[in-house]
Length: 71
Image (cartoon, rainbow, N blue to C red; front, side, top):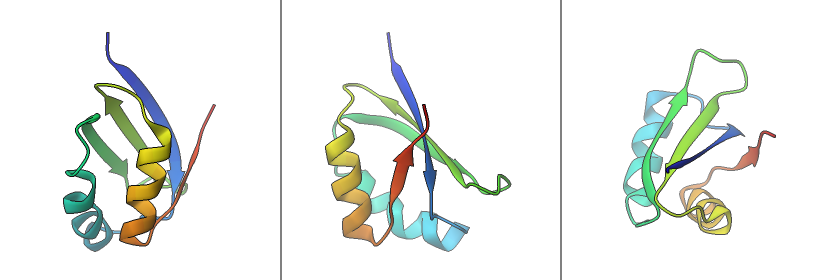
């Protein structure tokens, strides 16, 4: 069973997504991800092979972005 988590992000546009995409591809734990640019909180959804939130935060930071988990 896949684990899916959501995050509030500061990813604001398709240019931001283009910056983040190659960095997140480094992860073998992230199966797929997307950001709802229509949502004012820019909600990012991540489908995990194996959840590793620390890795996600490190990769986003490397790309110049951040995310906070939504409960």
